Image 1 (cartoon, rainbow, N blue to C red):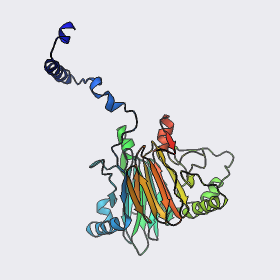
Image 2: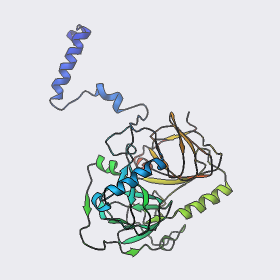
Image 3: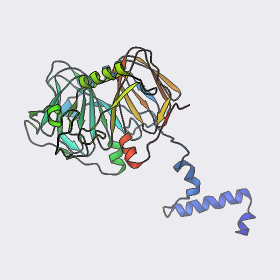
Image 4: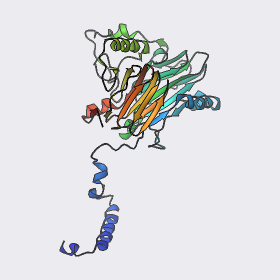
Length: 353
């Protein structure tokens, strides 16, 4: 040790370099060289704030419809790839997002996979999603679930193109190297022929039927109708008061547990009255926002975005966010909040500087 202290700075640097090379051959690495990057004082997400204007993306999505069929693509989707995560097919550090298109008469045939999925329907009429034998017609603003390892397919029986947002926990599944998938091989009608039963009847609306037991980690509801969420938001807006950071915000829940709709993804919808500006807020959940109604402006970190209906934007983990509605606005969002909460690592800061 005394000999080491008598080394010159250049000699120490050379000795350390040789040492690191030697231990590297044994697949070892010095923690003291990496500690500050592994255990940071605050979140340092690679994901960046980003905004996709629907009016700009839509023509390219429709162009894809003329280039290949839904059958050729299996799922004709344009990935919403965060610019801070190029080539990784991620919209945030832990989630995937994309916009899916079906042309009139097309069908995306049944498959299933380990990853859980959610849909927010944006445009068109006559489209359906079917999950494990139940089919639901999708209308604008409807929030549809596809739990892990369930057979699901989509179809467009209308006369116009249909478009919706896909959100999946693929990066979380792949983090654990637990991805499986399977295509439905039978010809003709896949396992999704019957209409979905009304959720108010099946699960009692705001009352839990005696004897109900969850059979899955995900909500049993297939479709959370936008019109019901919108009516509830309007009633809460009338009664007030507004949350300074969120205005009027509701979280979608599993009616059998009161918890999040899926084990890895949370979803919410909020109403921001005209002229209302939210107080600064941040949390550790990287969040994807989709404008269902209205127009306004958001500041995420150091960037500002002016948004309109169907626009999509992202607030990375721990980025300060504020939102101002120029007209009465409704915004859907999804994130990995529930997964963080289960791990005990979720954190928020209201009135963040």
